[in-house]
Length: 296
Image (tube, rainbow, N blue to C red):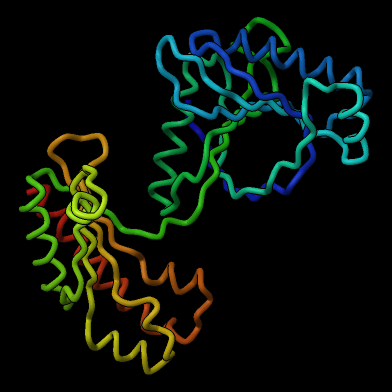
């Protein structure tokens, strides 16, 4: 199945909600049962739904796992008080607005992972990152019949613009740290600060931590131009580059470099708009060189 990905910003809305825990191995059946309970509560309160029922999954799935979920049904704002009085087992909430990437999955839940994979691939390529738990909006099903082939589910992932560039290196951490310093130097950055978080936590807290080093990278020419353009530009300096153990892959190291252009745009510092693109270009080239070196 091919998936068309779209991005939209959802508006805040009022909803009748129910928080519960379901069996990860029986999602369609348990969601259908809980949706019926929510629909019955809405009917008893005589509230009018303004959208399709949905579920936000608040934890990852695992075999034999119990998953906390948040079921909700959008309702009219002026029906909120009636819902509270008539259906005390539920809650009336205001769902916040979110920027979401979403797609439609048609058919059984057995293959809905394909929709998630398509979304995650698109999000990475479009330089966004996931910013919260997934939501499934049930346009058809699971409470509208047992034949899952007819189900239509909108899968939503909340997103925010990516603020970092990343390279993954499969080598010992000390070697990755050395290569990162070299790559930055080759593209005009000196290291003016270096913070070893693992060492700091061990010394100050007596606690262990994974390898995690923050490098403060500075290009003197760009720094001077930035400070001349805006005296408060020092708040953005130096450019932070993080070298850290990969969270799930043993023997791999992740290098993250802050995107200076994204930072300047987010802060609306127009005086730095001419400096940020060159800083981005240099940092991006350094990160790309690490990717290429790793693939050799």
